[in-house]
Image (cartoon, rainbow, N blue to C red; front, side, top):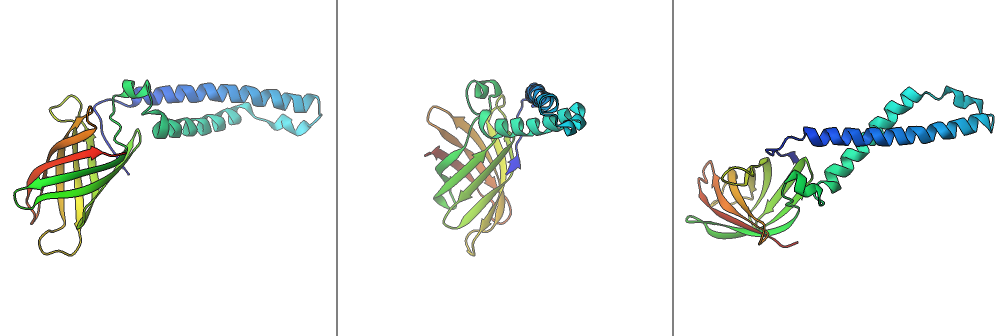
Length: 200
């Protein structure tokens, strides 16, 4: 998976995650303190006197931040109302699509997209090639919604060569589709339209 860019800053969300981690840390630290006092005072387990609130606070803060961040990055970011606040399209799923050019005509392909709050992976497979993401960007306020570059690795074939390409897509949320244009470099040097439809 690669990092993708958006027009929104992630600093506010990261600050909120740190605050949430701090609150969890205070709660857990309070519970640990209660337990250690009980064990020390009532069960006479004196070795709990070495308990250090400062070290405990830092360790729990670090652990709770990692857990909160992972949960948010993987699961929470695309659930309402958070998805409305972030305004980042959720592209997770299986897609079917096609490209169409004057030179090669219409070619069908399958795409699997895995996306978190910070990363995305997009694997495109045809009968002759596999494509891998190089860069990906959401551009909500510009003319087009998505820009990405890829590398297509082609199996031994005299007609089509491995190449780099760029796609410019618009999101059709009503029909769960991505539509736009693509361009390739190298010996292939083609351009045409591309269309994807989410199937699950």
